[in-house]
Image (tube, rainbow, N blue to C red; front, side):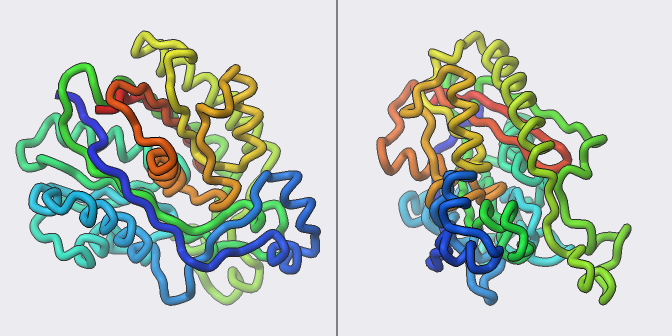
Length: 327
């Protein structure tokens, strides 16, 4: 039986960061931010809130709405590139905060593509092991901790948030129909945080140079995103014998509103079929696809048999696309 999404949860912090605040930090104007990105606001967690806290909040929404799931969870996968600590895995910390015992827990870091990498891994786990009945997959990031607030090109884009899905088996003909994952490591320098690993220690010199903060070649990332996502979307649709017109909803990684508008137009997709959270949540990295799934389900509940295409591009450079049929 194929893997399907049984329940969706999401969480965004309460603190709204307006374009006016971004303009103050980065010596720009609110109009520049809105025109260039299509983002009007984003959310920041406070200093005491960790990535695992965001993740646990998203999962608790699932348990509140489907309490019976608590007894069937066989594991937690957390997609993040802003973990609580270098080790152990943030997933293990989330497991503890949820009070779950004797289940698998691990992290996936494919940056903004991490949720779809985790979805494909979960499919393999549920297919090959008897231990797991249902799995939790969480995308969670706290990018406010790695923002250079003087850099308008990045601080205008990112926000904090988490989304979670409960995964389990669904009848044949539903669930995950096809998935494609790719990485082009020769382009890893397009976006990233230099310090904090074994190559560049997070010492006083690194902090003084701002090497603990996100740097991004925005034009190169945009060009890669547009060319790679289109190719993956075409491939994954071909894999499951569908066309663009067969897809009811396109849930893309919310890199920024303008990029998504351009990509939808390039595919010839009606904007009504492309739900957006970027305008009011910004780019929530690994959390953006499940957060957008939750938002579109709240606005218009999914119907059985809907075809949903998910696609993302992230640092690495990574990219992923998947098609599932809702059950």
